[in-house]
Image 1 (cartoon, helix red, strand yellow):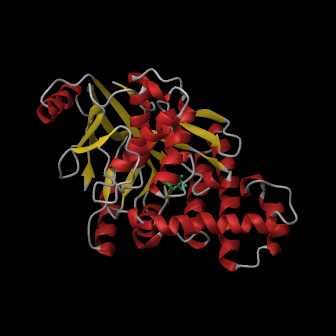
Image 2 (cartoon, rainbow, N blue to C red):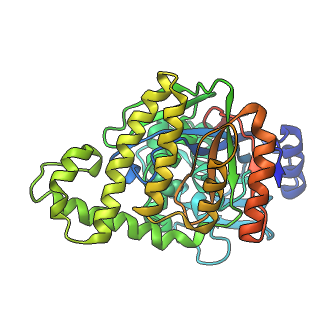
Length: 396
Ligand code: GAF
């Protein structure tokens, strides 16, 4: 299955809003999903990441209300309007779980110093061209959509990195996923045709133009949702924290991301648990690869970039054990095709998506060949997207 990315039209979205809420909407916003060139499961380990915002994401149409009700309607989920009071910070436990990403952001923004500026309710129509559970950060896109809408409409004094932090807090404390900062940061700080080289230890970042010459990035979705992987994700976070605590008995470090491969090697004897050792080894080696890959791209050494991307997948398979049959099938099929520099899984893993860097004139053949190998091995279709690299969450 090969998907055209459907860029939605503002008038169409305003018309939908009018039909749902029976009045005219005020403003329209777009919040992108993300890919990650390299640097997986490094963010919560204080390492580097290299993500970019994409033209697949979530649209939102906002309209103010005079009461305290928040009324949400999703154009992608079958169901009624989700309604709650602005002051209600309870966590939904029903099938409208997606509403929690909005609720978390509202709750935490209202708790800030100028939070009382959010003094009336609103209607919000959301429509995504990004499939949920595709590993392209639909949840972070929603959180940042809500963040920018509240900042703009209520004139809040909050900067974009702080909104990213509140999105992470929503995941960690409201939803229960102990994720890092990468997804929210990529969605809200994205820049057209650039990736963000972010040090998650210091939060220093630099935009690097994605200079791929004759090559392009193809997104490959397994069409296997990764939502059930939340507990396995949290296990990985704890295993890394345990490994870090063991290293801290001899090393003065705050995060695994502070270690290079050699120092890790010398002190790895302290990690007396095989699983924790493998997890930490991935976190440290992936951080090194991310720094080297970014440099390789700056130096126009695309073949080296591709090899490091492949090595990332291998490490995520053997040491981090988050790939699975679907993602391995896509990466391994991609590696065998003509004109491919590199391919790997992205995001949390266990399903979701992978990327490949492919020569533009081989792209169509690539999708046909990899699509067939995947269908034969897995029994259903993968999807391929040609997304563009775009700016972060904004009013359109
Ligand atoms: C998920 C998380 F939300 C991110 O914080 C990051 O850890 C990623 O998995 C793995 O790199 O997308």
